[in-house]
Structure formats: structure tokens, C-alpha cells
Length: 197
Image (tube, rainbow, N blue to C red; front, side):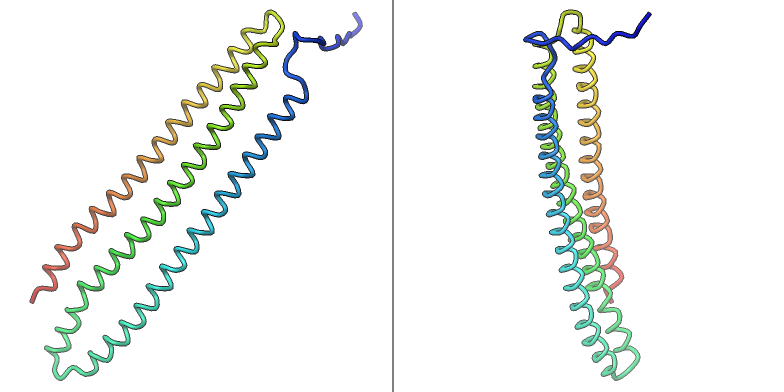
């Protein structure tokens, strides 16, 4: 039997046109480009914050090291020398905790921005896909209802999976922040006990 190619039906009873598919693809590419631009900007902003934090910490550490070294060199006896060293423990620990807190804030801020941008991107794509599938369903030839239902179910499952992933990511960030706060609260009393003469 010869292979016969039947032309696609023309008129109102057909799937979305090539133009409609191109518009959806163009909108998706534009949305992805906007997401990339936004995330790149946030990444550069975060790197700038991290750079500033590290530069400030390095400058402060250098200034404090010089001052501490001068004080240690001026110590008149071993007891004064040990007292000066002991006096540096709590401020150093407090500064390390504060530095880690700033670092955690930068990290959680980046995660929050990325999460918001990804949620917006996913919502935009979801809206476009839903419109596309709805348009296809309106114009689908008889008997293609199952294919449209499968597309809708697949997208619904993907959306549910993404929402669970996003929920887990937010929970991980909250846990990370709680662990940083908990560590800071545990180190401060220990530092105070060790520094007390």
C-alpha cells in the first residue's frame, strides 16, 4: 500500500496555527531572557555585597590586629599580656558571628530573589501554556480530547512538583537561618564565660 500524506485540515477546526505557536515560543524566550537578566543583576549585586563585606572585614581586621599588636608589645608583664589576649576572645568571636550573620543575610536574600524570579517565570510560562492548551482545546478536531487532557494533566503534575520543590527550598533557607541564629546564641554565652576573669 503506498504511503499517503494527508494535508492538515484547514479552517476553524484545527490546532493553533504556526503563528500562534511562534508567539508562545517568542514570549517564552523573552520571558527567559528577562529572567536571565534579572538573575544576572541580582548575582552581580550579591557579589558586590559579598566583596564589600569581605573588604570591610579585612580592613577592620588589619586595623584591629595592628592595635592589638601594639598593646601586646606594650605589656609590662606576662599577666598583662595574657589579660590582653583574653580580652580579645569575645570581640573576635562576636565579629565572626556578625560576619556569618551578614553572610547568611546575603545568601538568603539571593535565594529569595531567585525564588521570586523563578516563581514569576513559572507563573508566566504556566499562564502561556494554559492559554495555548485552552486555545488548542477549542479548535481541536473531534476525538482529540484525550490528548488535550493528557497535556493538562502533565502540566498540572509539573506545576505541583515545582511547587513542592520551591516549598522545600524555602524551608531549607529558613532552617539555615535558624541554625545560624541558634549557633550565634550558643556561642555568645560560651564566649562570655571564657572571657570572664
